[in-house]
Image (cartoon, rainbow, N blue to C red; front, side, top):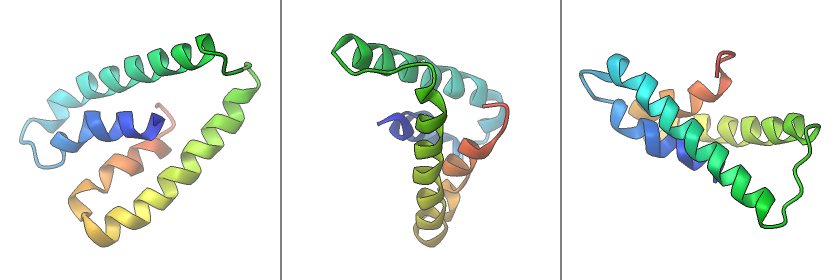
Length: 90
């Protein structure tokens, strides 16, 4: 689910002429939805501890690596979406 927020936020940027200008809003939208989802997960009984953040990040990067291969083979224009998961300033 968390990776889906990145896709929802960024897929229209792939061929958009104003992608660089719109990217901060897309990132903000994805981050807000990610935080809301994780808060709801925790409130609903999911147990997320601070030390789980490393494991969660590793699982997300594993999924993003799979997506890089998929997009490179099927939708090269969407390749920047999963590649953004590997940026350090995320």
